[in-house]
Amino acid sequence: MALHWKLVIDSANAAALADFWAAALEYEVEDPSALITQLLAAGHIGEDAVTEHRGRRNFRGHAAIRHPDDPFDQTSGVGRGRRVLFQDVPEPKSGKNRLHLDVHGGPGGLTELVARLETLGATCVHEVDRGPAGHWWVMRDPEGNEFCAA
Image (tube, rainbow, N blue to C red):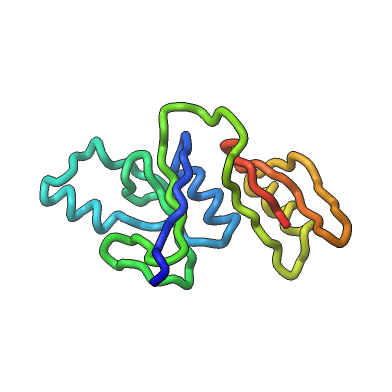
């Protein structure tokens, strides 16, 4: 039986990076506010573990996105399918990513995809054109994580 997984990305501002990647991938930002309300009421967490972002309560230093078509738990907001979790860490990014996402364009093609990603806050690093073998852009998200637009 195949295992379930989620991709975890270290960040400096989990909520902002989740917003960027949700828009880039057309995913949903998870809403854990109902779970947070329950945990606060039961005394399992304190207010210091919670922050607010875009009018929602969120766990401080954590934010996640999920594919809009995948199932999710109504109480916790946690996705049960394709999911990316962003977690704040104290140290800054220090080198090239050893793992990266490839974002594939839709009907508008690569030029439209790159323009949309730049509008969201991504930066183009360099273009790769290998003729029939492929054409893509190496890009960086707002925190400098490399990814490819293909």
